[in-house]
Length: 177
Image (cartoon, rainbow, N blue to C red):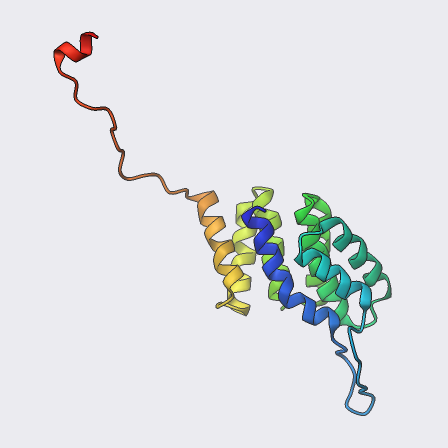
C-alpha cells in the first residue's frame, strides 16, 4: 500500500462517522437510529478503509443516490473522491471533491483529498492552496501534516548533503591488478 493510499484511508476514518450520522434533524423530530443512517455510505466507507476501492466507490455511489442529508452528501462525495484517487481516476476524483466543497466549503477532509488529487496531477499551486485552506480549518490533523510533507517532497525534494565515497584507497600495486 502506498503512502497516498494509507493517507486516504486515514482521512476516511473521520468521514465514516459523518456518513453514519443523522444530522439536520431538529430536537423536535430527532429519533434514535441504531446503526448507520445510510447503509451504503457506511459500507462504502468501511470498504475504502480496508483498501477495497472498487467496492467502496460502488457502494458510495449507491449511497449518494439516496443520501437525504447535506452532511451525508458531503461525507459521501469526500469518500468518493478518496476512493477514486485510490483507483487513479483523478478527473472523477476531482469532480467528487469539488461537489463536496460546493456543499460545504469548510470540510477539511475534502480539501485534503483534493490536495492529493492535485499532487498526483502535479498541479502544485492548487495543491498548496488546498493545503493552506485545510490548515486553516484543522491545523492539527495528522493527515494534513503528511500531505504537507508530500507536497514539500514534490516541489522541493531533499538532496543529500553528504556523499559517501565508498571507494577504498588502493596502493599502486593493487591498482594494477
